[in-house]
Length: 277
Image 1 (cartoon, rainbow, N blue to C red):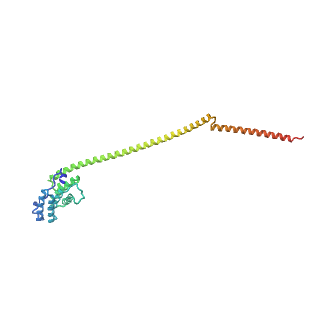
Image 2: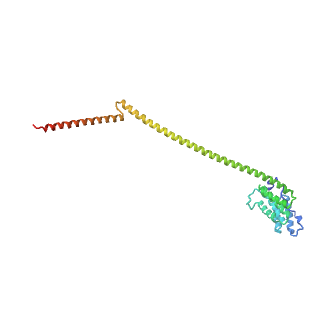
């Protein structure tokens, strides 16, 4: 309820006394009677019943500013400032609508000030301190002697200052959080980059070492094969090729000598046959 939400504030403006307006030409008898009944019920904290009487006063005189203001005070006692502002059935929203009209266009300056004062209390309870400050200032412009409005204005200004300080702290906290997040992100990125670079470097080194090891294994296998062949009385492929080439060279030389000898023998035979006997 609003009474709990505004514990640090001076109380709401009281309903307008109908007796002070008894001689007003626009106030009908029915309106005056209903206002008195409603104020009596309001003082007994029977706000829903007071609401009914204020509505009856408005039925008697729809333009009654006093009945509108008193109905708004009854709504405020039944509503909650923390309720959804868009809820049309919320009594607090109904009160706010009536008070806004009165603060703007009420013919009675004192009533405009009271309406602005209550609007300030609603805004204060919603932690809308900027709006509350403006409403209390309006109330003081209408009635400079309103000490309640002056006291609540100081409270709203202090709350606004505290709110701004908290927002600055939260803003700095969020900025530091984002900055740390970005730094951690960059650091992780650099670490991953260096790690990948080292991994690739290790892979290249492992590959190079593996190639060297394979070459060494091949050379060792060849040496083992040559050694094994020598132990078995054989020879390596390279030695076999050298021996084969030497044999081919000797055969070629031998064949050439035979060919020369055969040619010489054939010449001798032709010479002997050609002699005259």
